[in-house]
Length: 116
Image (cartoon, rainbow, N blue to C red; front, top):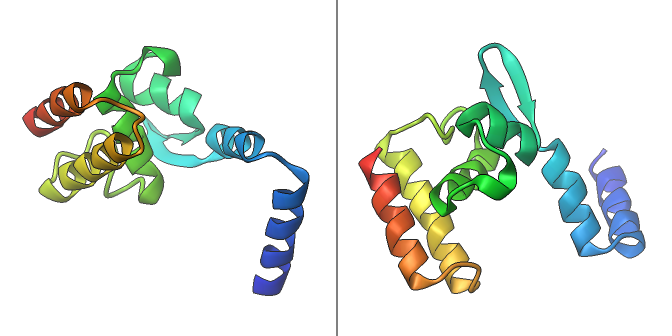
């Protein structure tokens, strides 16, 4: 089974661009359950957790959804445990290091994540 997954991964990597792989994953990734309904993909997650479209999410909300991918139960946008908040902040740090967000955006998002 593992060998099959590795081979499939190589085939996909060779035949698809990284952007198309990320888009496909982003539309299918499991993000938990809200009101008994399974949430798959960033668009469904943005709507289910924040009642917004993905392009309307704040930086902190986007980081919350990204954090959810790791473990939808522990890191749900509705989870306010210290562990969940710490993971969101780590996501924001990674976004800053990758120059996806500015330091000012990081500071605002961390402040919002910590107030929850």
